[in-house]
Image 1 (cartoon, rainbow, N blue to C red):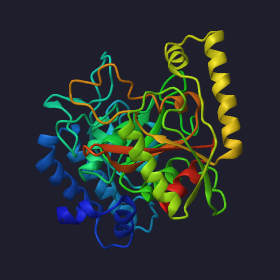
Image 2 (image 1 turned 135 degrees about the vertical axis):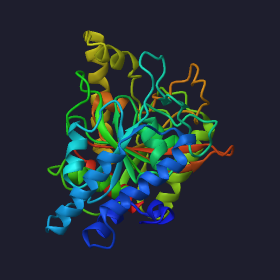
Image 3 (image 1 turned 45 degrees about the horizontal axis):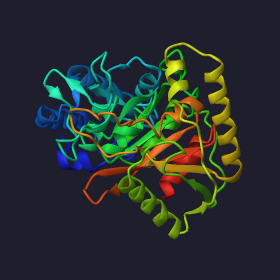
Image 4 (image 1 turned 120 degrees about the vertical axis):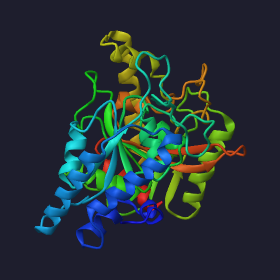
Length: 376
């Protein structure tokens, strides 16, 4: 039996390495995960369902495959699965084929709600491991909470407007949305990309290698040029949030790991175009807005390798919702444009609230984005 505190300290990459080399078994790892969930998720409410029997059976199969000489890049890694997609989705099938063990379904909001930055279970709302009075974000709420609490090393999500990146930022972890179209979209409009929530950039990179092995290689090593914007030209970003994210980016630049370039980032608010596409409606105004932002982003990426923003314009709200604030204001432009994006923990505001540093790369530059995250 793998002790719980040792299990919680391991990344997905580290677990897989131990299982492949016979240091622990997949069954040991899964038993540790199930014990931890049984002990702690009653209060956290990250999971709506735990698949204990199926997980143990899958772990036994992984152990047999490893013993037979099979190479499984993510052998024995327990994962949370976003409830709205389930274990049969494209990304979860690829993860299982690589040796991951789906451990349970993670919470999402109730259907038909007016806001999506929370998670619902039959035991009550999902709590944020950093502070139970905060929402964990959403809609991949349970996935973020499960990873942040150490119940699983990573969990799957889907991101149609920021639903991976927002909860990752509010729970102090990493959330990655690949280039739209790199994986099959989760909606007819093509806005909703599969994604992953992890505690380390290396785990996010391992995820990408498994689910999209043909993704483009990273750029040659070098200092990346970063264009900073707190608002994208339209968002009502709170000063404490903007200052915290910029302070994190400035530390990276002072360490010689990136160059901040004076490149204006001024987009049009994507709200009307996103809403129209999500509803299956497209008109001339929608097309004009999408084209204008695409042209602006093309010009920005001529001068910069990455765009950096705060991940959300405001800190985590309580379980009563965000009110009139738009949690997606800084994320959904890149569901519309399709660019890959990632959030890294940036620190906390003077009030102790978590802030994410949101990084956006050129189309198909997913590996460059993940490589930067690992260096930084």
